[in-house]
Every structure is written in C-alpha cells, then in structure tokens.
Length: 426
Image (cartoon, rainbow, N blue to C red; front, top):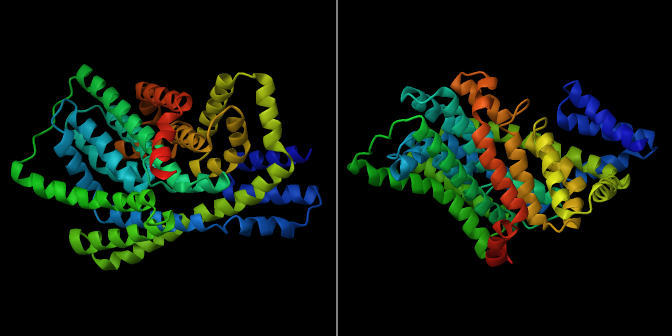
C-alpha cells in the first residue's frame, strides 16, 4: 500500500500537470505521513541530496555553455563545420550534424543545441530548397547526441543518482557512443539528401578559412580544457568546469567581442534559473529515492524482471523499452534521478557496468527528447521550422531507426562505452 501511495500520488500529480519536482516532494511527504515517518527525516534527505562535491560542477558547466552560446559560438561552429564538410551533397545537413557535435561539447543540452544551431540552420536549409520536415529532423536528431558528447551536466546528475560513479569515466564513456551516433546520423542524412537530390553546399572563400578555423577552434577549446584536465588528473571535474568558465568568459568578451560585458547579468540570470530547477529536482528526488529504497522497490523490480526472463539479453532489451517509453512522457533530468536507483540494480544483475548503463540511460532519454508527446527538443525544432509535430514525427522514422541501432550497439557491445574510461581514467 505504501508503494501505491508513493507512485500513485506521483503519477496522479503528473497527470494534472504539477511540475515534476513539486510532484516528487508532495508524493514523498504524503507517503511519509501515511507511513508515520518523521517528516524532518525527509527534509534531511532533501538537503543531504545536495551535499555532494561533484554537484558543484553543474553550475559551472551551465554558465560556460550560456556564456559561449550568448557570445555567438553557434555561428562560428556552423562556419567551421561548413569548411570541413559543407561541399558534399546535402552539405547543409552535414554541417548541421557536425555543428551539433561541436556544440554538444560545450553546451551539453539538446534543447540549447536546437535553439542555437536550429535558429540559424533551419531557415538556411529551407531557403536552399530543403524540405522543412527534413531540416527539422536533422536538427533535432543531431541535437540528441549533444547530451552524450562530454562534458554533460546530465552525466553528473546520473553520477549522483548512481551513488558516485566517476564523472570522468562517464564523460569518456559517452564520447565514442556520441561520435558513433553522429556518424550514423551523417550517413542517414546523406542517403536522404542524395535520394531527394538536395543541393551541394557553397564553397567557402579561401581567404576566409583561416579566420573561421581559428575562431571555431578557440570556442571548442573550452571542451578541450575541461576534458583534458579531467583525463590527465590535473583537475577534478568541478575545477575543470570552473576553469572552463574563465576561459569562456575571456574568449567571449575579449576575443570574439560580439556582445558587451553588460550582458553578463542576463547570462547569470538564465544560469541561476536553470540551476535552481536542476538543484530542486535533485533535492526532491533524494527524498523520493530514499523512500523507494526503504520500500524495496528496486529489489522488487529486479526480482520481477529476472523472474519474467532469466535471459540477460531479454532483460536489457526490456530496460531499454522501459526507458524509451518513460522518455516519451518525462524530461531527462527527473527521469535520470527517478529511474537510476530502480533500474541500475537490474542492469548490474544482467552484467552491465554502471558507466555503460549511464551511457545507455542518457541515449534512451535523449531519444525521448525528440519523441512525442512530450519531446521538448521536438517542440522547439517544430516551432523554429514552423511545421506541425505530426509532419516532423513522420519524417523522423529513418533517424529513429539509426538511433535505435546505435542504442542496441551500445547496449550489447560494452567496450564502446568502457574502452576509453579503462585506458584514460582508470
């Protein structure tokens, strides 16, 4: 009955459109009252959920992404991608995917990727006679890989939910799968571009190339600093993120100089708004997760899935289906916090490493960001492209197929996620 009160009240609150974080708090306190638990213990759990050194990296990652985004990094990364791959058939689509790969290494947010890259490239692609649904499809599907390309604050949230899995290992674990996903999307985009006879990109003037490459690489060096510091052991993830903020600040306001330093107040305001939502979610989910553990929900789910099928392959497939379905109805951060304590024990019982499960979890939920009915990146892309969601979803079928193929490869080929961490981190 306690489990029914906890999960039933939470689902009911979601159905009546109560914000997820508030729903977690209310359902936790209702269950605490039903079980006659001292509510002070739940409050202590909420506070304790934020008492983690690794969480200090999140505000720095968010701030670095906001600074670079405001300073025009998306336009420079698009220009850099255009120099590299823009001259092939369907060149603007290729540029879209590659620019999202670059941008993901800075922002770590699919929605930010769609907003920044999409606001520039979707109108450009439509003007160049690309179909509007194709322009949106390429943009939102390539943005999903931005969540996996390190550094990603969602990986830090997973690290906390999983009980302290190495952030550096998670960052490195997501790199190869993220690049593999980008390659798959490049192939699908090119095949469709050839089939529909989309135009080749315009060649870049030779005298402009050095400036484009220099400015693009300066922006990308933010991610290099963060990852280099973590991999070499010179900095922790938090220290690397802080140094990345300083570098982003210098590049944006003293090298690019597209915006005045007075815009820093607006950047900080947006950062604090995002951070407050993330930290409230983490705090709320700490109490919710504690009750889940107290009621032995993870153990019940593990026993239920194992009794359904003792085959590890079937178990892992079921986990993927569950995550894909959940991702269609909830946003990424709350799902990471809710699903990890329940499904991680099941995955480990089936032989999956926590780092590999983190990468699988993130990819599943990133697909959810571009899947109706609640895909936020899908909604943003459709708003920019000015097309109905139904039209965009229909055109997404080949992109979904590519992403599912990569998901299955990551699920059943552990070394895709574990090779780099084993070589560079451990």
